[in-house]
Length: 391
Image (tube, rainbow, N blue to C red; front, side, top):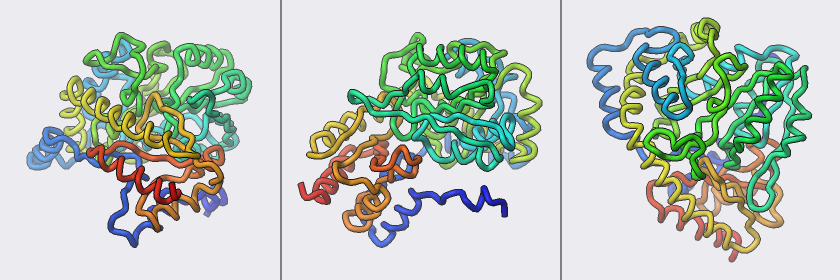
């Protein structure tokens, strides 16, 4: 086995979940998904496809009609995006891995904004690349990037700049000015941007582009300002905004002319996404104008229920996230997030993700996924935390 693979850490979130296995009453806020099932029309579309016998391969890049629908959806948010720039993938994380396989190899430098979901920084390591980490920092109640520090880290030697915004776990979201500065700088250095924008519709700020589909807010995207020829690959997913985490369906928005390369790496990985799953994606996009705003509005209600309750606990520091579905917080005097998360799960039935799971920059913090169908579950979770802290 390669040393790089052997050295990869296991999932610390799973480690915490294992610590809580003995309790049947654990409130599981540790994973990044809602407890709501996928809407019935999406499930029915997939079931109908199965009953029609659609169990065969599709084109590597996905069903033509799904690529057209994704292109229309992206165009409604960000301006013209043609279907020949879309590649359908078996999950958002696969989309990110495919992008990295297309761009980075042994000895290449990848600059990543952290803390971040650990899969993103593990992928270039698996491919033999080196990762330079540039940290977000909490300031004035928000997580922020030192733009000059990030620009200085990206040099002509940098093959890829990896940015997840809105960010998991912090909720940090790039401003339009920051995006423009990064795009212009990467044009000068010849650096590719891989943008993980799977939370773009889980955004609670002011719309930046006319409101997006259905007039609802959408986080700033590199697609709003980049041209089709720019060295930009955007990864997307049906998981969060359509309640489809278990479906494992995502897509890439590629530069013009990159579809052949994407088709090759798709062939050598998964060949294609299952056709019946793609039919579910088509049904989801048909509902986007109503479904996505409803989901986002509910997630904002969840955030606005949880954040004040956490902030009211003595010793708790939490920054309000403008996007995503997570509260990232710390407790005074608690610097071992893994040990604390295990204790909360095993002894108090509260399942949270340890901040160190997202890199050393997250040590001392905890991540709480607030995507809950029942707001009272959030209240119960806060009560358990308060009891654990003897407040």
